[in-house]
Image (tube, rainbow, N blue to C red; front, side, top):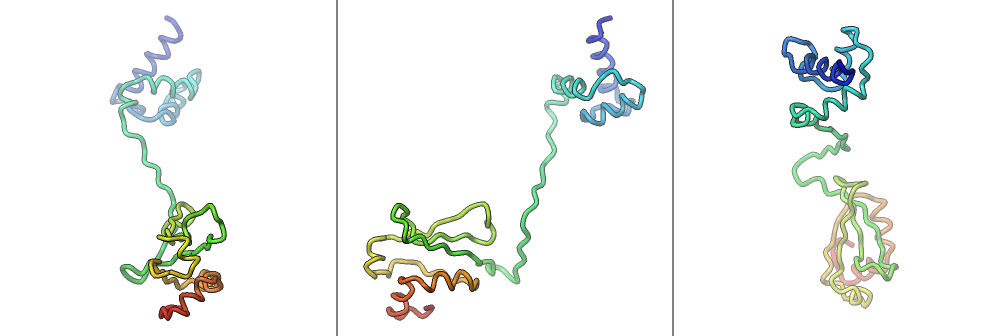
Length: 160
């Protein structure tokens, strides 16, 4: 008997016979079962390659991966409105006036607040800009130093 055929028959007997403890298991557990029976000439890599050629193993659903997420605790519904503001008005190639980074997606995504008329913002015509309020003191301090904030205050917006 060929050694390749012998390995195939041995793995088929172990994998497909339901009375065996290694039936329909993954490559690591099947290798451990073979090793506990005293079969050491079949390596883990051979078991894995053999399993990938079997239909019953390839059609099974893979394990789900659970990724750790940052935990955010809020006191009620719609209380999760913490964000970081980045003023990029001095960069001419960028169209958005501000960039905001919500607390739920910090580190993954950033969304931009588009200024409808970027040139008109420079000319102090600011009535089309949405106003965002945050409790983060660092973000407020960096944003309140900008010239557009002085204009908002002079136009008697209540938040500035």
